[in-house]
Image (cartoon, helix red, strand yellow):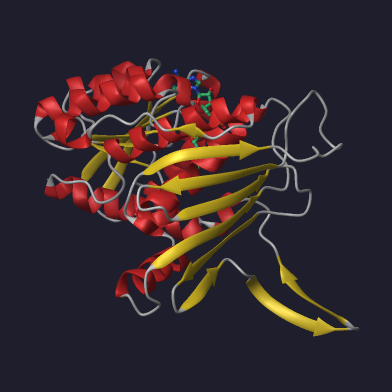
Length: 342
Ligand SMILES: NC(=O)c1ccc[n+]([C@@H]2O[C@H](COP(=O)([O-])OP(=O)(O)OC[C@H]3O[C@@H](n4cnc5c(N)ncnc54)[C@H](O)[C@@H]3O)[C@@H](O)[C@H]2O)c1
């Protein structure tokens, strides 16, 4: 396979961003077609990309399932909303198409597990999940430092995840399933073990969003070894996009996400710029994620979070949403990995 022919299903914020990335920044791949429930959106994107040769021929496919089935598509990026992922993932598996699926893998743990089982039956890994923080150079450096053992064993993680604002349709459960899910993956990845229990508490909510949205939220994850991670998620922080992680180990701590851009000290003040959203903060991570996915797909592999990682995160979030309503710790019901994957 000399050039990976890619199709993208769902070209809203993330899908359009990935389309530009495949066209302008990714080597060894070519964007062949796009599809969206809103056909005019797909057409507008295709027209926008038509500006530069050889991308004057990105096809618009009306039905995303037809895009997945198309003979001239080798691999698929799914950036449709989470509720559409299960059906489209099964279609990718049916057609043997490698797929980079934006998080969440699916909307609940049961359907995510069915995806894991269906992929396992095929005998090869076709699904990679878009937990892009694993590709962020800062997170990667933190992981390498912790794995080196230089600081001793890692005991605790403190995480902060703040967005400037989110659309009014963003509900309390989405703060767990769509935002906190990134910290769920980060904790599982940095510690290299499963989360067994989650507690989600809700402090006094911001008055700047109404309608009963519980924002911010505070969560504690308990891991199999007894290590813990806490996370504040505040999606209507008003200021900018901020993601921090401090790892506390036996002989020291390490923090990432302290600042971006140039810090200035002037007029009795000090400070720097904050990115407005995740596309700016994690641009390099998305670029690396897609490039490494393309390279791995050509080799017939995945190179990043697997379907199991997507399932495990879904199981933690499901327990987290239960804890959100009770305020109590909830055990994570995770299938036995060795029984499912052998
Ligand atoms: N990794 C990250 O950092 C990150 C960030 C934001 C969003 N996401 C994920 O990316 C996905 C898309 O999010 P978004 O912010 O781009 O949303 P969006 O609403 O901007 O875009 C979704 C697009 O999908 C289209 N769509 C709806 N149903 C569809 C279907 N059945 N098939 C194909 N297209 C369909 C919509 O018309 C829309 O254009 C979600 O799964 C979201 O959780 C990931």
